[in-house]
Length: 357
Image 1 (cartoon, rainbow, N blue to C red):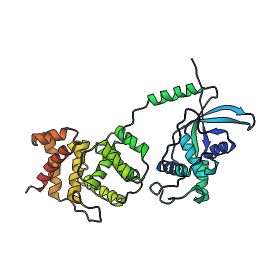
Image 2: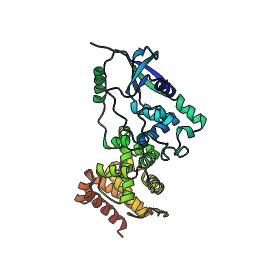
Image 3: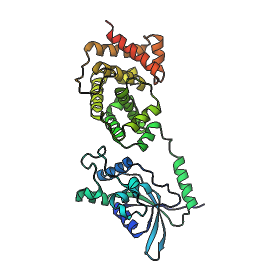
Image 4: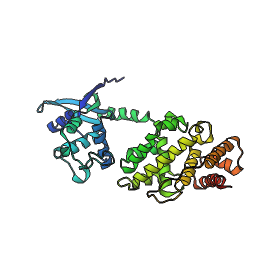
């Protein structure tokens, strides 16, 4: 039985640049995909490095030493797009197949406002040094491991992971204004998501709270709609480069979430509102009372909830828990309630009880 001992080490960005300049770094061995990253993903990587955040492990294979260059040839087994992004940002002219349309990019404002639209040459000396000194965790595969064994290694790696859910797929595809905004908003309430028992830590690790926040953004942008993966994907795509409504959406989201926390937070963990789909309806109703459903996204002072409205919503939660609601409401509340008919049914019931004199 074959057994290989991987060498786990770290290399600086400058190490990879040096190897590339010497011609001893191979970015395109047979088992590597060609570069397909969008500009947003590239900007996100550079900003991640500048902030000193960790990046997934890079795999390289050291082959026999080149007798002319006196350097071992290094195949990039996994990490080609990360390294190509760095090279194209720092010293683009060194790439023989450099393509301005595909390879040129700057740091996006959505990732770093202070460094927006800057190329490497435009950065301050200390930031350049931070990038060059950044250390990648690297697994070095021995030279005697053949290509077919590399395929085997990565087939095993890919077979042991969980299948990506819809939100994780969005996270891997989009890097622009909308994604950045949604993730920042969801992160502000990380403690509340778990304290209110809407999500477990496992749910958060799978980005479920980000998907629900996306649904709230959709509500404010498009009104009450059904939830489909395609509809949420369309938002990320539509507002990836430009999201003019961002500031107002973030502000309204925070106002509504804080209002929910102030009035219902202590009750949520022991009420039906801890169920994600019912919490969604609570957010819809509070947003409607505060700003108005389908209201224009302009500067508008929010309306505070009255004591009667708060008490009514608390009583609705109690009635749901005790089964003291009409049969169609009970059925709608126990389903996934992600289609428009059930959402409208619940919304109208909640709103009807609130406005009933």
